[in-house]
Length: 286
Ligand code: KMH
Ligand code: ZN
Image 1 (cartoon, helix red, strand yellow):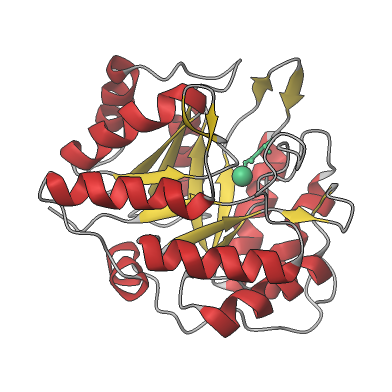
Image 2: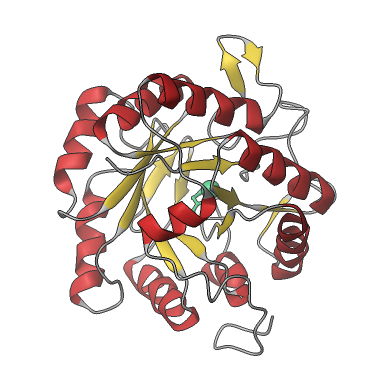
């Protein structure tokens, strides 16, 4: 079995400091949190942008500062979000890809998101995939429901995505697929052979689905974007605390945890393009 890749989704776009006082927002906080998550066993940091007031933003200047702060203290793979927050325009969402991070997310379909709609029109998904390809960025396919797997395969047929794909099953968003063991098995059985996958269980679905992934040979995402609690009614002290619990359980189940360089190897990331700051691109200047 492959070593376990743990992703820490440290800030997200929806959680507030009022809900979780440990939420990292400023570049120094993000850099420090990433380093602590790496120490606890994370090899990927999934990043959203926040302005100084904590509002979600996909401004590439904010991402540039985050990336610089992370690189000073750790060797983690930086995975920038292209989901941003519900309601953001596609052009805004795509901005951090101009920085050529090692990875970025790609949601391959539209899904209800609580009372709102996380809108991903086919033409926008194609644009996102094409831009990631141009920039040498490894996409992580965010799957909020099973049809999104088929949509990703359409992009493979069009030459916009290359096999093997890496999927992240986001399970338990109100409006998306429910976070049950049966649904996780169905998703795992629906992806092409040779793919890698992780699971991000939302709220109370986080821990049981993570344990299933450890046993099944998948990978795990935890962090404040998905779950602010350590246990029922008890806030987590930090993202690192959530990462450490997964690393400990994996150890007890006999699954070794991957370092960032081992995760690069598993995911087929060369490391060459990481965080290059490039000039003007078809989507704006960096
Ligand atoms: N904030 C959600 C609407 C991603 O990062 O790519 C979308 C999201 C997915 O978080
Ligand atoms: Zn996200």
